[in-house]
Length: 580
Image (cartoon, helix red, strand yellow):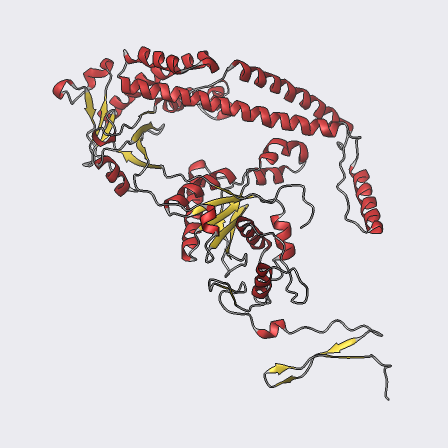
């Protein structure tokens, strides 16, 4: 294995996620929409007050403070509504703290990258090319690989601008560190982006009424926590199997209730609500009175949606990575994530590629969030269908996040804005999270492997052996083979079959035999083939070709085919030209 700068070992299995979230549209009437809006406004005021109290408590907040906050809210709403309000405030505070830590780490890395280059002398483009050319010549003379050269910035102006940016980054790091130490967070209900656009309506292309409508819609949504062993899994927002939706109303809104039997103050919507996606799982949940959390979303366009979140009682069992590796018939479905498509490959337990698979398109650039998520769902569904068709129990993906590109890409690739935008636009986190959730429902395990050098070593060791004259395997598919081998614990290198040389492992021999197109049976009877499906390539493609003839050098000629075999090639000395 070559000397590496980044780790290439250590496959990590993703945790199983089985929580479902489904959505249904509520065709609310004008009266229904007015009641839901009044309820959302009332809870929005309570949520704003409680969030401010939670932020003032800071990192010293404990369970006693939580109990006091909930008790103070109960007089303005029920205890169940108060539980949802306090939980939402705690979640918002925890998210803000995580964002602070991540922002501090990112800005610290960017500042370190700038400081590292500022100490280097300024080098123009011409000077860089000359230094690289000199290093290549020196490496060729010494018989080694060229070393990586570090350069400073290209001009004095860029050097001065980077010094200014370094000061800004260090000031922001100091402010974030101070906030983290004091437990101070900055949270805006509705989003800071929308709040800042209030002062720049012309640039945002919004009128004052349009902005107010967006601001109100972003703060009116509300929800209710699920409760086990309660009627239909939720006492605050109740959706019965007959599609009847009811919501509990606080005492301040009791005059809007239309269900007052036995002292209750509830409002029953006139329109039925039904889930068209995964309705069977939802019915099994509510009929058994298991917990179901609901969220009512009031959109800016006037539409009303109901989201249901729950964990099914019966979920498919996902085997562990150790159990899967013990299976001699294991097949790994490895995926190489690229800009615009997914490159899949099926790898057997010996680390050999089985069959050819087409690329899966994944177009997400310059698309709205909802459209991008739809394309991502479709690509993951096609990926899992393909994995199921090839009887794969394990999916190997790159453990990517492009954190270095997002944090230090501006300092390392400042002039390559298109490259930075392309890399940062690849939905690595969304793809990984969506794949884990959807694969868990099918009982398929997902493992993340290091992606370092996968494309380089795939092109070096696997692209040529897996290609033939009819079909050339792409370097992305070869990289997927390397990822699948890493998930199994194999190295990326493809060993050559040399029977006379000791030390060649059995997996290496199976790899070489598979590359020649001959099926080789393992101990469990599983076969490995060339990349061309389950058909060995034509024998004529493996006849050794004669080397190029040069005057005065040894020449070889093909042996004549006799019967079903081929006679060995003969070597003759090239004699002088002309008649004997």
